Image (cartoon, rainbow, N blue to C red; front, top):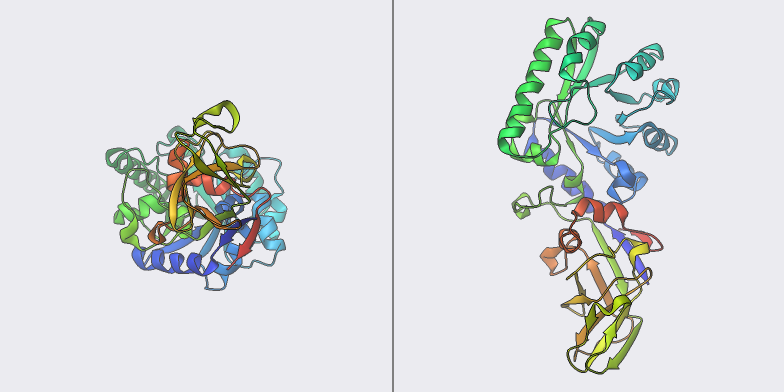
Amino acid sequence: MREIQVDLAKIQNNYRTLKALVAPSEVMAVVKANGYGHGMHEVAQALEDIAVDALGVADLDEAIALRAAGIKSRLMCWILSADDDFQMAAEQNIELGISNFVVLEAALAANVKTIHIKVDTGLGRAGFAKTQWAEVFEKLSGKTIGLFSHLANTSEEEDLGQEQLFLEAETLALASGVKISQRHLAATAGALSYPSMRYEMVRAGIGIYGLNPWEDREYSQYQLQPAMRAVSEVVNLKRVPAGQGVSYGYRYRTAQETNLALVPFGYSEGMPRIAVGAKVLIAGKQFEVSGRVAMDQFVVDIGDHEVPLGSEVVIFGDPAKGEPSAEDLGASAGTINYEIVTRIGGRAKRVYL
């Protein structure tokens, strides 16, 4: 009735494609947030099977869960609290991205083997502020670290400005006697846009799932394929007269006598309630969702088209096959594909291909 289909072979192929595009840089595959909704353990294992360079997650709990599941690849996390189990991180050979002195002291005390210092180059989130760089690098003099930051993706001018600050941080670190094993600044968008920012490694998140990292740029030239399809089926059909109100608040009324199809996939499965103009694919044709999405279901006015009960409904998938995309669904709700795929699921059954 409701399925989230994830094609692991497409994720593997996307990873290989990105590796070729940014060579000779390494590629860290980011599998945080349950693999951007695709399944953290399944995606990590599929990538480990093709000798992924490194895996990245947000927090230590995610990293420990991957180790407990048997993942042996190089593994890094970067949102850390003073209450985290740094001894466990050391024992499990988990690399830490560090943004403040409290966490740095805890990681050093636990003898974490590999640390990466994050410098804030303009995003304004995590990372040591420029006023702290001298102190942190002096503390690490004689040690070998990774150095990283993250782009705001605001404009080319802003991105290049961040790169200059990143290079300033590198220069200061080296002058302080710090050895840098690896630099990483760019995620998918930066890695594809700026060859100079690839350094020794890039972090690819949305790209390995075949989704567009931009809201305003074409993406098909990179030959990356969406790995997720969200599908349901038609479970009820009825003929209604003109003027029939549909769903809560009657945001939609039929213009003429028509057929309504009911699809059991609602905002509890991640279909945005605020979506307006979202389209789904039924029997080879795209139809607009009619009225407000409810918790468990939505309605589609299919006009005079006749489709049998049980017909597949593609909520999003691969636009190259005529299916609506995660980008399309996000746009209908004023959001981005990242939010769509990370929130999708609910009662839907996950199927791995």
